[in-house]
Figure 1 (cartoon, helix red, strand yellow):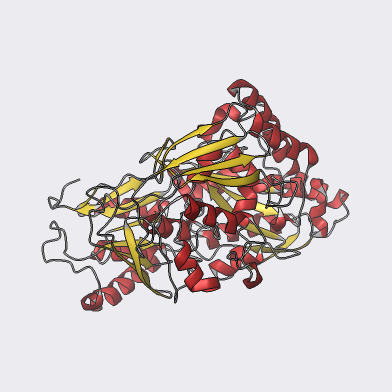
Figure 2 (figure 1 turned 60 degrees about the horizontal axis):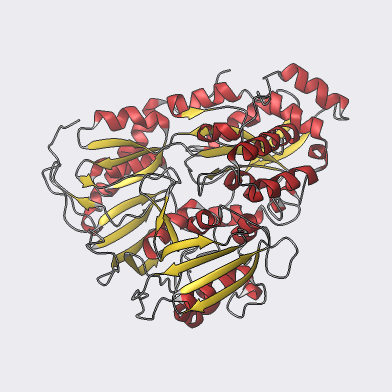
Amino acid sequence: MRLGRRSNSVILAFVAFVLAIFLSNCDNSPNQTSNNPAVAPTGALVYGSVGQPVNLEPGNITDGNSIIVQRQIYNYLVDFKPGTTDLQPSLAKEWTASEDGKTWTFKLQEGVKFHDGTDFNAEAVKFNIERWWDPQSEFGYRDAGKIYEIWGQLFGGYKGTPESLLQEVVTQDEFTIKFVLKQPFAGFPSAMASGYFGIASPEAIKQAGAQYGTPSSLAVGTGPFIFQEWRTDDRIVLEKNPNYWKPNLPKSEQLVVRFIKDPAARLAQLRAGTIDFTVDLTPDQLAEIKSDSNLESVLRPSFNVGYLALNPSYEPLAKPEVRQAIAIAINYKEIVKAFWNELGKNDAHFTPPSLQEFQSAQVTGYQYNPERAKQVIAAAGYPNGFDLELFYMPVSRPYFPNPKPIAEAFAAELSAIGINVNLQTKDWAAYLEDRNKPPGYQAFMLGWTGDYGDPDNFYYPHFGPGATLDLGGWKNETLLELLNEGRVTKKQAERSKIYAKVDEIVAQEAVRLPIVHSQPLLAKRKYLKGWNPSPLGSEVFDGLEKGVAQSGDE
């Protein structure tokens, strides 16, 4: 299959244009470069983000752009060891489970303060948890449209609903908090370590109200950097926390997060030295990075899935055989080869290769067969095909670094079997929000980078209770039973069998088609030291600093 790609001349012209713009504006950059490209520039540490956050309010986001900034402002009860999915203490210095596995007790750090000078303690943790979990919380501001979607996805539901995993939050003393669960969940500390649940200042939230975490308001945590300003569609500026409770951190005085949607523009700015490091570049930019003696490519460990969602609430897609026909109409391997080169892998599983022990050997994937797909669609009652709106993301993500041309490739494949695809997109925040509004998008591209090292984290947020609003509320009762069984089962061998069955059902139902498990391409100036990318897609930048590189070093 031949996939249309932008010519090299067009790309080079665009890069040159972008370079000229930013070089002409260097005087306004917070990060001035010296005449010697081997010497680290003075000023702020500047990160090139793929877009701006949806907001800076913990618990009320699901996107990576928000998580990466929130990790700099907030601390979490539990954290991950750099570059791994292994847990380590953070605001909680230790945690234990009761014998029946239903009560988790967290002992908290003492003497920690929020950026506004107020005390961190068990009551502050309870305040944050309750606004995410309790629909009746005075400070949840749900009347302003806040839904805390991710809490329901990871923990089944909200206070007062039969699906809620959490039953009670108890402050035992000033620095001890207990979580009482409906059933055992061994992954509870890992879930709390995920990038959504930073602990914010209760006083700051009360002060800002429903505006908390928006560009014109506050964002107050206990983390290494203090929020200063958010210039919409341009940058977020963070300053060093001089009273950070972790010794000798952060290493940098200031962190600037620049919003640069286009991968070519991000690389152009990196080469010009107006940013120090960036993420989610396209695989075909690897050669350009390697050709620049002042840059280094960095590969984030693969722990993600990029998928194509098919909404069964749209009548043609309500029939499983139609969804399965679409699955065999797309030549995944050729698309992945064309757009990811050696940095992407297609297989039949929704979970990444590193979770192979939880996958079924019976799931071998849908074999590319467009002629058979046409026959199946005709037999299902659509001999002339049908119209389909396919939404693609407006920003590059680790799993889909260049969404629009990938969507165009999907459209070309589906048009060959009689499906007339109308490509659509929206602003990133609206894209995420509107997909959950009935009836949702007919079909859309999205993905997931794991929050912790367990298959539960891939399946439960996509197929568990309350997790399929973007699929019109579709559910499979057997699948739901298996997911809950996987959460309460402790023995690894038994869990592997459970998730192998889940793997088989997800493949058969074909509501979220796995397209790729990618190895995201990152890059930095050589003088940047201390960057250890996490497989989970976000990490704290508190240990990064500018050193001195030797010009021309490989």
